[in-house]
Structure formats: C-alpha cells, structure tokens
Image (cartoon, rainbow over all chains, first blue to last red):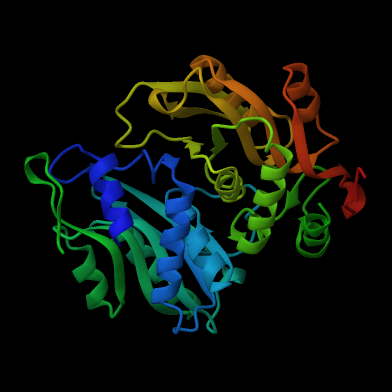
Length: 190
Length: 190
C-alpha cells in the first residue's frame, strides 16, 4: 500500500534494528484519513470471505480494525489486556508473551461475542513474532470460530510472525512489509 | 442523540445503580456505524471551534474519538495509561484516580504532539466523576493548549463529572445523559 509506505518513510523513526517508531500516525497520534484508507484496503482484500466480525487487541489495533469493520459492515471486538470492571461474563482467555517487553499478559474476549458460526478477520498494527495474533487465533479456536485471515498494517518481515501464522494455516495480508531496519534505514520487501 | 439512546435502551445492561454495561456496542464489541454517527455528531457540534486535534484516553475512547477526528479533519492522539516501549520522548503526565476501580493510574501524552497553538477537543466514552477528562485537561494545560470542550458519549448525570468540568470552564457536550439507573431502569435526563 503505497500511501502507507510513504507515510512510514516520511514520518517514522528507526529506534534500533528491530524497533520502528510510528507514534506520529499509528500508535499514539493517529492519522484518521490514513486509517480509513487502511480499512478500505483490508475490507477489499477480505470482502469475499464472509467475515462476520473483526477482532483486534487494545489499543493500537483499534483504529485500523474499526475502519475495516466499518467497510465490511460487521462489528469490531477488541480483546482486552486487563480485565474490565464490567466484564463479569465468562471469558475466553489466553496468555500472550511479548518478546520486546519481556512480559506475559492475559488477553480476553467475552464468550458471548464469539461463537462457532463466526468467521473472524484479525487486524493488528504490527506483526513481529506473531504472539499477539496467535493469541487472538487461540481465542477464536476456543470459541470454535473460523479465522479467515490476519490483516497487518506493518509486518516486520525479518521476524518470524508471518511463518508462525502460516504454519497455523492463517492467511496473512500485510500492507507494508519491512525487510530490514539495519543501519537506521527502512527497506521494504517489495 | 436518539440513535444512541435507542441503542442504550436495547443493548445495555444495568449492573448497579451506578454502573451501566455497554460492552455490546461501545466498550468491548463496537458498532462501527454507530461510532461513525457519533463522530459526525461531535464534529458538527464543535465544527466552528477551530479544533486542531482530538484527544482521548485508551482504550474505549478511541473509537468515537477516531471518527470525530476524521470528520473534523484533524489528528487524534490517545493518551496512554501505561508507558509504551517506544515512548522515549519527554512526556506530559498526570495522575488519574478511578472511583470505580479505586486505583490511581498515570496517563501520558508525548510533549511533541501537544503545544500552545493547539485547540483541543476531548472525547471520551463515559463521564462519571470527570477524573479522566480532568486528567486530559491537565495534560493540555501543561502543554499550554486550549481546550475547546469535551464530547462525551454517555454522561452519568447523577454523578458530578459535568459540574467538575464546568467549574474549570470546559464546555461539555454529551450525546446521552442518564439521570438515573435506579431499580435497574435507565432514565434519560431529556
């Protein structure tokens, strides 16, 4: 997606060989028009899959996922990393390990919002080692829901997230694939 | 906003005299079309204020705030409750006490995204005691930015949030004002 790649080149910062900072348009400050275009792109790529719900993980996944859900005309569910005061229902839960933060967190979705008739599109802002996306796949599996694929805004293709998801049979669509961040330079895969 | 009130009547749950559960369309599962209409409504109410940025607090504020920012054609910034790995900049920070959770958390926005030329619209999903909104007002004050007002999706008018914000000179626009949740019944203010 050229619009996104241009934004990454112009407005992101390479913090290390592994960490790209995109908090000027995706992770902290958000460009709503770009998110709309991202939503249109994901909706277009998955429009023939019979998607019934989009799911993502709070907080950075919400913006791209919301527009994807809007254009697919389905609800969005965001998995929580912390338990909400009003979430007294039975929960689908899964532990997710973050390699970058080196912490394990428990993500959850209320059982009543996912069921075996659902066809789920997973949306997330980043794909690195794939642990967050795998956690969302696991929640779908617990509910018996079918995962039609994962839509990723920025894939760090030098990490193993894509392979990990593909081994599980998950279709991965990434809008920007980064081959390398070495020497402070952003190189796209294609 | 009639569409929202109908949704609240049909799809929310009264958990106690003080707690309304709206996780079927706002706080966990999200109705994107409703959020779009909420964004149009807020943009319309604040369109003559020269808003330069919309700010909110992760996570439940992001959806209504994103559409408000889209239709006002300005960026959205979401304040974080936890520090991000890539947030190495200087931060505006403020402690926010939650009466319902009985915990104090530190919210933050990077200094580089708020400055004294900004005219800020604050958007949040709920207004109860006003502590979250006051925290966002405080971050704006630290940056020297002007707050044009606060757009609230659901105001619990039996709590003192509106008065607290108005004492600070903040214009408050709420799309649904709940007068009472007593006896498991939702009563709107008007």
